[in-house]
Amino acid sequence: RVVALPGPGEGSMLVTLVPSSGFAGSALAPQPQVQVVDTFGNPVQGMRINASINSNASLGWPRHDGQAFTSASNTGLNAGLGGQLWAMSVDGLVSFTDLVLNTPLKRTILVFRSETGLETTAPSFPVYAGSYVSLRVRQQPTIWDAGRPAL
Image (cartoon, rainbow, N blue to C red; front, side, top):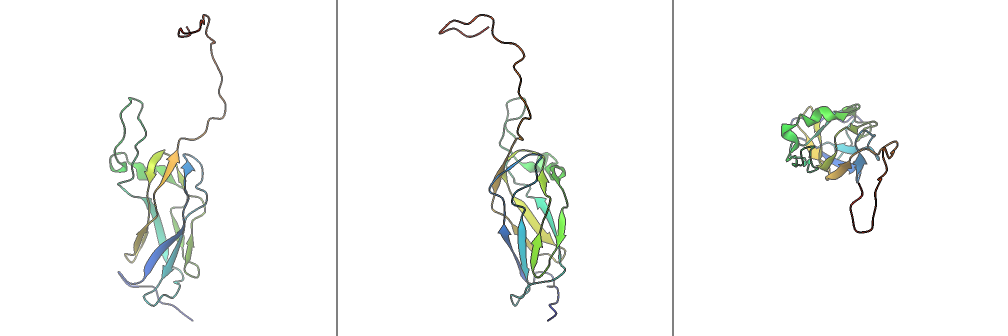
């Protein structure tokens, strides 16, 4: 059976797999999956789907100056989404394999778009700052009394 690609606005997409959280600089786990069907509910073969970050994603985490970012739209954040940003549907399923977010986001919203105009968004999830490889104390306090700050 041959299924034609949906025309503009025809068919639908549904996010079937999305991470519940992630770490900046690491591949998302699990990687997102999107289901694509035509107007009659048949799986679509060979449709290219692109991934991006919603411009209303909330950065929320404090900047180095203590202020909070308000949205991704003023940060050039889509440059922080890495990996293969598109995938093709196979039997109606689009599987991304190596998406990485390089910036911590309090509320990450992935958007998936087809070249025919279909669009869907994934439920939001947080991306935390990456973990440290090591931590070393450079100088221990020299004076320390109970109830007084260490110097």
